[in-house]
Image (cartoon, rainbow, N blue to C red; front, top):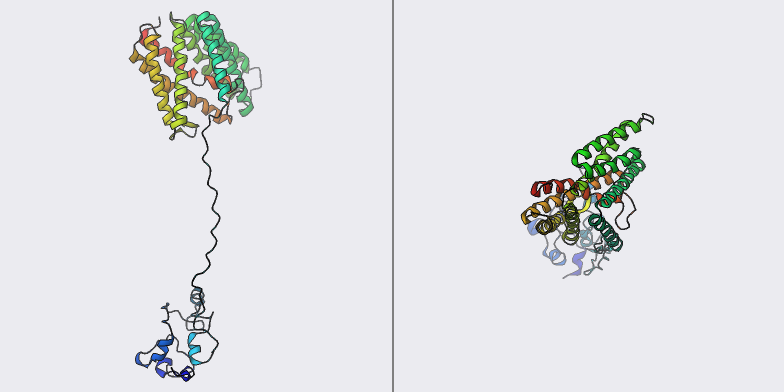
Length: 385
């Protein structure tokens, strides 16, 4: 190729009517385009038709969006061909293998957490075995001693409940009439049955109303309402345990009631801890799962069938299946009810009296609502005997 062609003026068909510069928007015009230029240039990429700065349309945004070698950042490539800027390069050198950008630091993957019981299992098991031994011994040696154990548990439970209400909500439920009336309810239930329990409940409610009158009227309604709730929730439900004891095989009935409740809780814990995935009531008790409930039902039904067949006079195994199902449901509802109270109060446990368990009320939560259920079903199945 002749080197003088780099300084020769291009054909008019390429530059237009004059050699003062390229016509805006002009394109190569067919045969007038010199083949020599095509051999020394690469095809120009197709870009949108955007008016340059200073044209009829004052669109600075187009130039900003299409900045690069085709616009102002580098000399126009035809300046080289025309000899106006011999030092200009047709295209800027682009590295073929650019250095890769360093990878952004990846967040640390959370380590899977091992499931834990949430309590000191050693202390919980030890305390549970000790309480069980005391209850069984008193139950089969002297029934009156067992009634006393229930009355003491009721009084301590009332103290824990009223104390937490005052600390967290400022509610002052009268403890003295509740404690005296609660113990009286348990004894009346054992001596006079359901009639004695109802009479003691009514007298306790009246005592709560009168006792609170000795203090200023501010907060009277909420205090007596909490007192009546506490009287029903703790001592009145506990009287059904004392009424079970009245039957000829009362000690065995109470033992079946305790065994089924413990087995239900154990089944719920074991199955829920191992297989639990679906939350049962996450807003009330996040640790409880539907799989745990199924475990409670299965364990309690099997235990109920065995207990009714071998421990209750005239009991039949299929009655035990129904009894176990009812116990699993009532124990779970009782546990959820207690959890609802603790969520409202903003506490984890009602007390710290029992290591590994919490307070007395934390152990009575599933027993109290289950007592009337077991008492009623046993009366229906085998009589009050």
